[in-house]
Length: 122
Image (cartoon, rainbow, N blue to C red; front, side):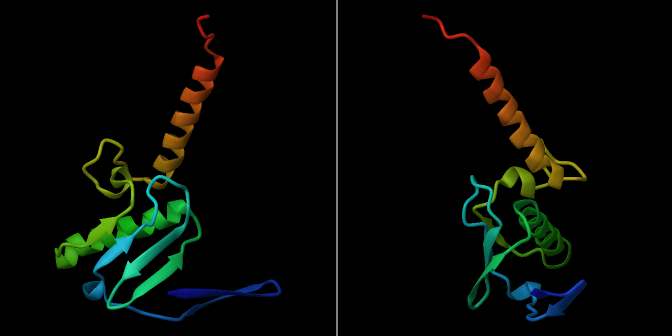
């Protein structure tokens, strides 16, 4: 865990806690269908954290998932995340998955605009 300090124009970062990936039991995104940066890391104790953004929360979960598959190969639970953006075998898989969240939101917004412009039969 890194704490960010801003002193005038200077920015400082301080490592406040370290955990072993082997001790991580679960990552809980709290709400998969809302855009929020909050998530929980479950070790022997549950730590509630806030990422910089929802995209960075997903980037963190993807990174931890890849590290787990590469080195530990244990059954790490990742819950309350949209699995489309976490797993590499999904349709939306790409090298730049952070943009996928924005693309999907834009796609839904475009559909809503199109539907709102369609005349309703009377």
